[in-house]
Image (cartoon, rainbow, N blue to C red; front, side):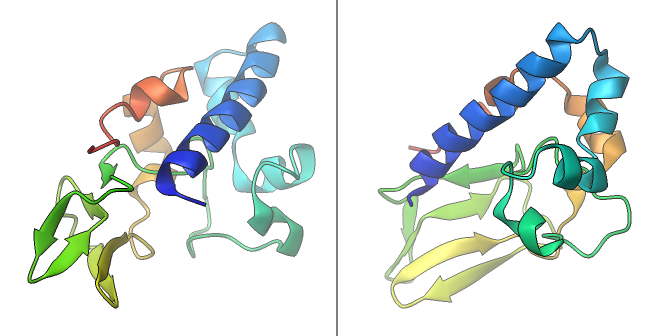
Length: 142
């Protein structure tokens, strides 16, 4: 699956959950609460493939799944740039010290596995929008 395919698929899944919550009359705080990992695993088991194994994408006690990805992530399926003869397909716009480039042959992809920023409630509250694609609007680099 390409970055763009994942992005569109996830946006649709996220939108369906948020629409359901808005119809129930939930406000911002309640929507963010709903996206707590433990609640999502029980209430929306198909939202993330990791839920089936009760596995978190990041080792943190209070993981929130509202964003699932980071608005600072930049990607292009055709490549963002060339660096040292390799094509960079994704990178971090804020050059987070918790992230790093991962090289696979001639491809460079951003490794965000050590960065928990988008799963922290205080960050989600800061960037919150019921439209996930608005939050993530700058992610597409190409």
